[in-house]
Length: 142
Image 1 (tube, rainbow, N blue to C red):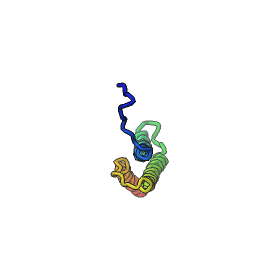
Image 2: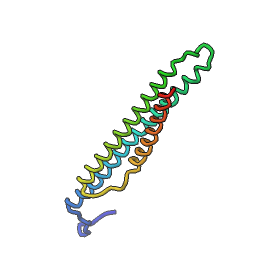
Image 3: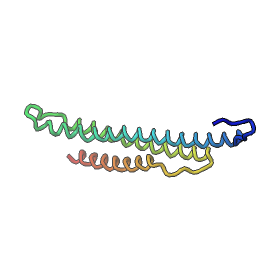
Image 4: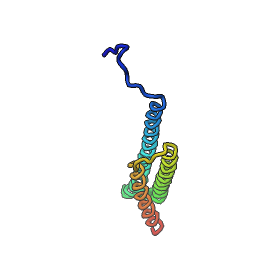
């Protein structure tokens, strides 16, 4: 499409262009923060899975002839450590996300919708804490 000198192009002021770019930059920053939180979630879920499977594996090994003396208590300790690390990571991810979103909303002078990644992180944190406390008290009783 060719424009002649007589045709007028819609002109935007530099202020309007800057506002458009700035609002998109805030959205990109928010989405990057959500991706970081989801990375914490993926790592924590892996730690939780290993925290459950390592003690279970050692419990199964006690039934194998010749491996009756497998260190099940040590495996439970490692599993609890992994669960504790997952809880700590998720807690730090929630705090980091909330502080960042508050700072971003203040800088953007607007409000952002609720972060789905943050809600998922809180839900998984609650489940991980429940699992860790449940396993901790069962280990203490045996």
